Image (cartoon, rainbow, N blue to C red):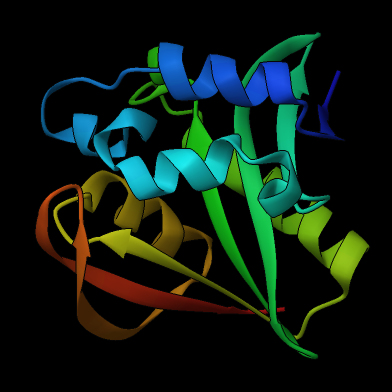
Length: 154
């Protein structure tokens, strides 16, 4: 059985926000680590119909957000259930998200931003075909962090 994408409910958003906790430096991605991101993630109006939970065999394994940048570009955000991280699931999960984005939004380009320290994710993104675009500093989680902007041609 493959991956299924469904619009995120409030209950699912709260579960992810308060119960998904990542190990060591990856705790950077805990929703509670940045209060502004947490407020936005928990606001059903701001989530709208662009945030999806991803299930496989009726279990939530992750989520994707899809934000239209312009007529040809979708910017994505994603997260995988913490206990599935680092077990070789990333490539298949990302492929499913890209296929969903292509079928739903028909973009010419998909972009994402990732913290530079997250070499594990960057390796997966590059393997699937994302290319480095630029680096930038962003204030988040109470400090300033370097991020890598990446782009994928559909």
